[in-house]
Amino acid sequence: MSKADEGYGEWEELVGAALLGTDRRRGAGPAGSPEALLDAAAVHAVRRRAGLRPAPAGPRPVPAPTDPRPAPPEAARRRLAQLLAGRTGAAGRGGRRGAAPDLTELLPQWLAAAGRYGYRAPAALVPALLDAARARTDLRPQALALAGTRGLWLARLNPDWRFALRGGAGGGGGTPDVTDRGAVERLWQEGLFAERVALLGAVRAHDAAAALELMATTWTAERAEDRLMFLDSLRVGLSHADEPFLEAALDDRSRNVRATAAELLSALPQSALAGRMAERALACVGPKGVTPPAECDAGMLRDGVVRQPPAGRGERAWWLGQLVEAAPLSCWRERFGGLSPEEIVALPVAAGEGWTEELHAAWCRAAVRQRDPQWSRALLGPATAPPAAAPGTASLAERAKLLETLPDAERAQWVAQFVRAHGLSEAFQLLGVCVVPWAGPLGRAVVDALDIAREAGSYPWSFSGVMGLAERCLDPAEAGRLEALTATAEEPPDAVPGAAAYWAEAFQRLVATLRLREAMLTELSPTT
Image (cartoon, rainbow, N blue to C red; front, side, top):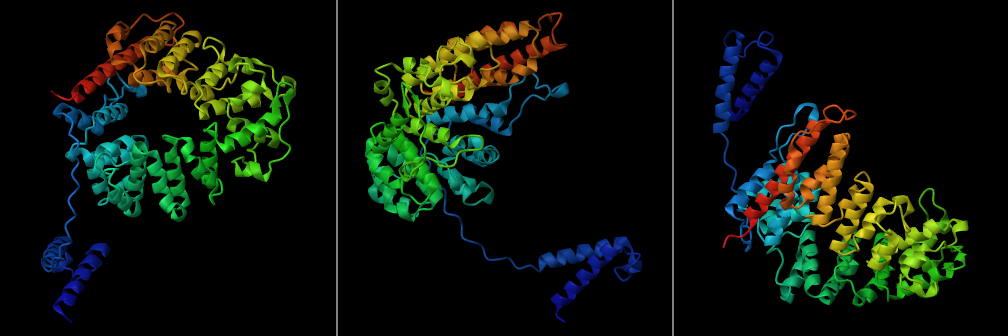
């Protein structure tokens, strides 16, 4: 028996004695005492470690690529470290948030502002940034852009960060000069999926036709999920130059790719698919009523119509909605004798047959897909009208999508009028589509509505969602105007007990958060 085998046997004896107990297994040391067992184990542990031979060193990692973007100012770096640590005020009794700002909710705004300035992440904070992006998918696009090439380099070394290699742009310096054709083609052929997505987006922004040509070189060899992601990049700069490629994609072997190609083509009002859909839709809808399609033929299937309706929907209504949704909105003016969208939507089209709601819902989807503000205004109606009386839809989710087609200022004005007319209980989704920071009239409408709820002694927790939005979206310049609301007011006789203190705390947190946001933006400003 070799010395090594003998030593291994002795170690096993010691392990066995420790597991069974020294009183049940003799021979583990003098009189089998626990102290002797531990002394012997310590000697053997040192002996075993001393006998280990060092393994050969592995190759050093290739150094991270240089990121030419500037680092943020020192104060902004300290702020990022604080936000990544997520330090907030301790919650009070009953789960109350307290008056301290929630730093985790401010991290997305810091990342967005840093991206606008073109900063890179401080090297020491890249690991914490990747950890945050791993935990919160909503942070990933901006966090990975800030982490840049160093973030991708680290992701290749740590399995916990491999998500960064599957998506995201990878930040500045991650793609070659889009005018360097050779470098672009090499990365497209050899790069990781995330790098190829970033490359395609960069080329598309520079030269839409070149991006289409690049995608076509490997299209038939790509996986279905990759083809779908690459096809989605055509939404940026979509034009009729993309039509031949998209028309061919209608015959793709992947159903999702075919559906996306059809959706993109229907967003081009002059495309052949839009024309085919218009012909079908006009045959079904007119001033005299609605006659939905009797069948879903092969041509409709190729053009993206889904045959099987979801549960609870009739087949013919399902097919009709898809035809109207994909038809160019411009075709309806002539069909209805030159009427405007407002006048068309106001018509009681086939009301007796129950098709009006289906038709209006399809027009809403068409207005969103085709980004048509005129039709969106017609379908939204006046903001002061009761939601149930909306000409196009009473659904707040659909109204939010329609609002996104309007110019920023008009969108904020419409939502401000809605809040003043109907309060905040139904405005949450609508507020979420308004540009941050909220325009003055919208911000004042929200604060006024919150103040009215406070004075009425309303249940304060019912407005916690809107208050959280206000913390993130109000213009920081509003902080001074809100100071008067931070004091604890006298509770009305019929108020919820303790509501006044909760409202005061909520407004204190709102003011503190606005001041912190203002400080963040100041810290990020480049020094001159």
